[in-house]
Length: 271
Image 1 (cartoon, rainbow, N blue to C red):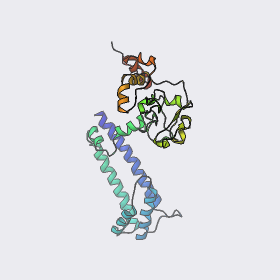
Image 2 (image 1 turned 90 degrees about the vertical axis):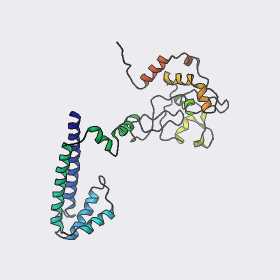
Image 3 (image 1 turned 120 degrees about the horizontal axis):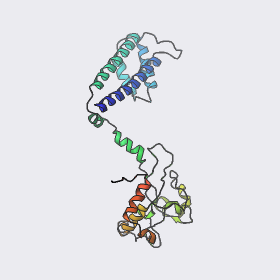
Image 4 (image 1 turned 180 degrees about the horizontal axis):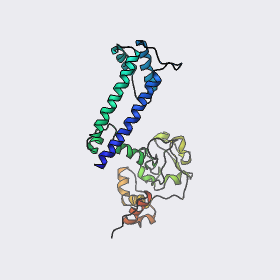
């Protein structure tokens, strides 16, 4: 099958990279600081393996204990040992190459992997899993390698359990609006002391929430808050939010369109 052939090529490519790294590490480790090949003694093997562990430290985790155990079992001198090592690596390469050529079904191979590709892809595409401290919108920065969390469109804060202290009503405004205002917030992170929204970075330095009162929630989240206002209030032990009247006129189709627009999903056309 085409998929199996593609997998075989991928496995072979990865194997080649690994083997080349090991052979390069052996080449570097077989020489002293002066660039001269180590002497043909048993002590040189100790230096070789120690050097290899250092050269491959970013790729392979070899404990000092494992290194000592290996050295204890070796009885030859340096030159025969390094020749046998290179031969063993080439034999292993051919054995694995043969195994790849007769590989299993792609799905079976993927199921046996310690790291699931689909999970890794999900993390890279759908973000790191962190949520806005106010509205609980998930971070949209792909993967985990980013300095600040951010989201293009935030939600009404009531969906993240925020409520007005005096009225106990769920908050319908967006974080982006409030960080541009003089409003204040308090929670467990502030030890229940009031602080201006605009100073949110004192408590959440890893989040970037643009202070922009013109940004609106998508019609989808407006619709959700309107439809389930009472249920959210009951769940969060608060009072329903005072939603704008315009939100109550949003239809289900408009809400779904808002969801599609938010995630750049093209609607399917039916004939």
